Image (cartoon, rainbow, N blue to C red; front, side):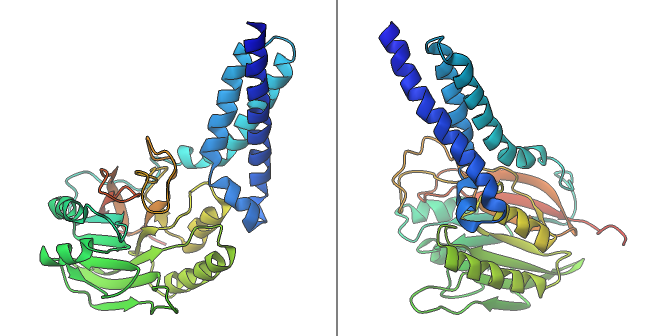
Length: 321
């Protein structure tokens, strides 16, 4: 029994110290893009700290107080990163399920090599959404077009599909062998015009490209009317990262996907990690103050390594300035 308790302590100490170090270094993401990469995995550091705490209770009594203190500090360091997002849930402007002027959006990274493209397209068509925003559209896009959707660009990394034609549209041209990652389209309804922006961002570990994409997307959003803007995409970025928080503030839009975990769906694409459940929220939908949130839901596994997101908004008069 003593050997077992010692083995538990030998496991708990590295787990506690490692999660504490990661959580503390992640706080440096306020100033360093490299350290900000650690913030994306804050739920893992939190889980590791809590697991180490459980192991500490089963370990030897000698050294237990010190080990428990390290575990609690590790959990607090990670929890401070995650808490603002969790506490913000439910604070968005809301509308009833039967509110007039509803707009339904499906956001989905379909994965270009999706073997279940037909089933994925069938599920999306069954949603009867007004707008579908796809990244890596692959074989899903032509099936949606055959089902009555209008693709607002032909060959782009992020595509907007709509039931109605757009008044204006734009798709960023390819750069070398890389497709453009931004597209937007302007539509109208009884309340006037609104613009939908689609994006597919790189993983934040690609620091140079991530910085360039941030500047280009900021430029597009700042040049368009934002009161009724909608931005949707695979951002490969979690809401507890300092980079995502900065964009939330800069854009002046309300992110409607609050702590909605969408990745990974399975061991697909470049992902080969165990995926019994999604553990990163990286697909997001934003909307301006002219929209209220009716519902936000995660869809089923559709053959990609991302889950789809279904967001229903309703027209809302912005507050008087």
